[in-house]
Image (cartoon, rainbow over all chains, first blue to last red; front, side):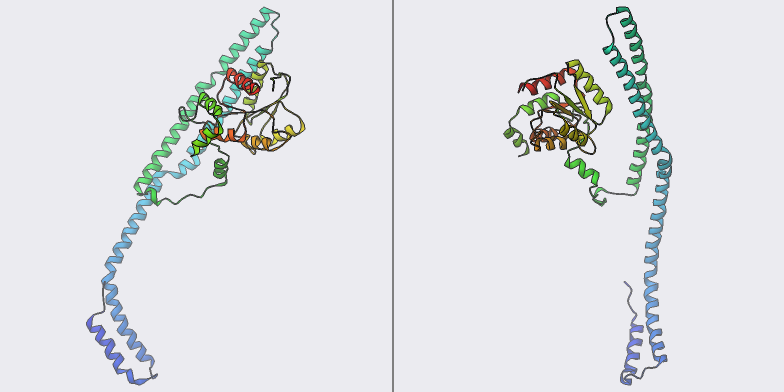
Length: 224
Length: 127
């Protein structure tokens, strides 16, 4: 770190010694003179530290420019205005088409179950007609499969860009702030709402049957 | 307690298709008096107005879950003896244990078939 030069220190001391015996009798010119001496000292100090400060500011400016470039390459506006809403519409369409197909299939099955079987020929005609309706309704699987592929593609696109963004910004896990639990998350935790499990993750019906056959002591041991 | 096909059964699920599936399966098993509710709150109101012989409930519903419904039923002296079967996609060990501690009579994990439903209902009334 830069310090005052010997010459400036001497000037300040001389000034103070010359004015030591003047008590409160200090004029504007004295103050100006002292200010001039001090400014001279600061000028040299600033001159010494300026290259380092300038270098730091340049580095910060470069980092901000780089971050702006990364944010642009994230294409956040494209994600927000196009891809995510489109994925949402695809999922809505999937829900609608599966509901519609399920309704068609169940209605056909209910009509078969409730049909009059006394007239064998009429019953056979009805069953054939309803079976065709069921086959037709099952075509939803092809369309929903294509829609799901589009949603998966969008998720991959977002995942790729966010991953790149995190890597480029050198964000490390322990830098991420702890998130506060939302009301929805608290409700899920308190009411044990996990939703459906993936294959092999949940317990099977036979496991459940075994657990329900256990005594309370056996269950309590699971928590020990 | 004997299995009586004439007894009223309450099916609780927020997904209409699932209510329809369970209703049809119950009809196939011979049950005739089948009522339904879309969540725990509606189910509890119905249970206070009518005595059901069996409740078949989903777990994950809004605003009152099947788990909360089960606990409220068991806490109410006039309803506490009602047989209660949970039919749910919640298949974690802690869910099954919590349901058992709360007093569930049986627990069916979705997806299930008619044979499983039949077997669990029979098991509840065989106890």
